[in-house]
Amino acid sequence: MRFAKLLAERNTPGSQTRQPTVAFLGDSVTHGCFELYMKDEKSFETYVDQDHCYQEDLRKILHLLYPWCQVGTINAGVSGNTAAGGAARLERDVLSYHPDLVVVCFGLNDACRGEDFLPVYEESLGKIFDEVRKSGAEAIFMTPNMMNTSLSPRLLARGEPIIRGAAEGCLAVQNGGRLERFLAAGKATAEKYGVPVCDVYAKWKKLSENGVDITALLANDINHPSREMHWLFAVSLMETILS
Image 1 (cartoon, rainbow, N blue to C red):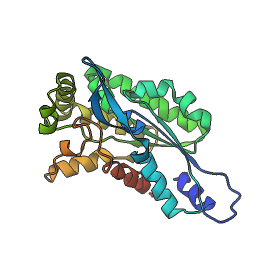
Image 2: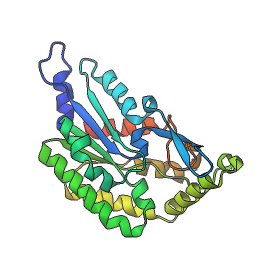
Image 3: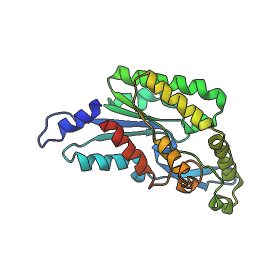
């Protein structure tokens, strides 16, 4: 990728090349959302901890590998967002900052909207990839994590019907195969636009196939990866950047 070349060129004491910048466009996982708590009797809220999300992990890896290269980062994650929402705010939240690389990660909320939303998901991703290309930046399509594959005893013990309902909804989307159908369409759209795919979902699926309890790796027992699992996103992105 061109971004890797920018990193190498900048990684020299006294380099006069410009600082590389990477933007992250996505949903609550990109935003840095983790555990859930009841806000009142009828709604819940999420804890935000951007110091431990994958963008910060990637920044640490980049600093380790390229100590003379200061990389600018833009967190354009919005909790609850879909690809359509990302496309609508792309110029304002991402392209106006003139990034060199845009990491796009959508699918969780899109799949939860229902099968009828699949064409909108594909169209929105295509718009994002096209606009990023026109801006002169590179894009990476990163697939998200798996959602819960069971109802966590920890979640059930809390006795909160609203949060349980959210878990049951995501469970149906995950185990019913809808999320995988959306991500397959997302990867096909990325391929159509010549955008590299960082397939993090495939790594989660491999863990599941080898007996790992996926639900136990989710900070909210539903769809937000634990802080430790954000490292998988960062390492996978680094592999894609260097490929």
